[in-house]
Length: 478
Ligand code: FAD
Ligand code: NAI
Image (cartoon, rainbow, N blue to C red):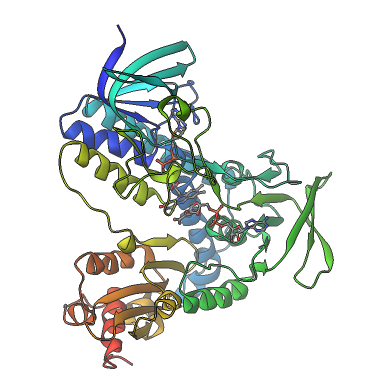
């Protein structure tokens, strides 16, 4: 007799493992299958998906190490600290990153055991439906097993998109998998795509001494951010020595003795070749739907490969849901997690709701960039009347003390009601500061609510309050 579960989750990334945990908390019998995209040295699947294995967590470990190195080299003297012979041992830095990944992925296994979630080791694919539920084949290393589940949550995530004429080998020409594993800092690094990965990973290796050139097809970059933030970022990145070439067309990449040469045409139509030791391809990601055999339950991906779902993450097949990178919306770990909770709570008869407009975005560059809600350009195109308050970190004592005084916070509020419509940050600790903006938007707070809230002194959060005060032109420290 096949194993039967109330809920089967396909994929153990942040969407899938959180959905499984919440469903188990709510009393369902839950299984989660994972096909071992990331094995540990013993050949066991490491849980946590892209986020824990080849995305957020390892990349932020490298961001932290490279920032510490750059601070030591460039900023310790400002504090009167002299240190000589500062160097970076990239192998040790990578070992530290691996230890964090191992700890986090093992943590997910622990949570599965704690919540009595059955881990099925293998690739899940649909085989059809019977009165007992959906039939799913789990193809593992030791063969196939069929299980039956009343409800299924597809959380199979995404993988890097590649482009023609640029053959990724994840040694010299890398996507996110190889780009996080360099054993030494390249002298010259090429990056295709000035998106989130290009900027974050490019900044890691720039801090560690690489000459980084980013080739971007669009005439501008950071198009999703508020225009004043992208302008400021562009200025700061240029000052740091990150070369970003916009409006290029990528030609052929060729491996050679020294690394790789990449042909491209610039925005004036002139042809160039960039020689580099390593090349990173970061041109977006595509959803993982192949081999799910969706046809067996009457589903098919849309023209971009995403599984169509409604506002509640329900697919057209009753009882089958899809969450995270495999469906519409931003490809963010916290979005995947929140959709996982949303689906599990719906299955338990609750009425959860997700407001995608109050979901924060963060880009882990130096300084960090973060935002929530609408940009000025979006509000203008909607014809909405709004007020703007902006305050620089340079006028904040804590930022000066930390030696991190670049950037600003900008708040946008409705001209009539004063409801906060967007918060945009470029500056130190933007990733943490933005949580206040997200909370305010969830509560539909006004800028006056933040302006009247006592903030600790001295702290970077005072910049948020001053930006709120600036909306009514009453910033106190400027
Ligand atoms: P995934 O994490 O991709 O997990 C899907 C899982 O499903 C995988 O483990 C895969 O092996 C498994 N799977 C696939 N098919 C099957 C199958 N048929 N059967 C069984 N298992 C299957 N987001 C942020 O919010 N913040 C960040 O700082 C951030 N940094 C990133 C850095 C990089 C370099 C990258 C690449 C991404 C980053 N992201 C970040 C995005 C984030 O990683 C994803 O949005 C998130 O992991 C999506 O979660 P998911 O559960 O939908 O899918
Ligand atoms: P992206 O969508 O952020 O950026 C891709 C960039 O490549 C765009 O600027 C695009 O115009 C450019 N591009 C596309 N085709 C090109 C071509 N042929 N030649 C040159 N440029 C080209 O995608 P990226 O950076 O690969 O990241 C994938 C996803 O991972 C992101 O969408 C994001 O959701 C997630 N992510 C999130 C992070 C975070 O939250 N901090 C960090 C890293 C990734």
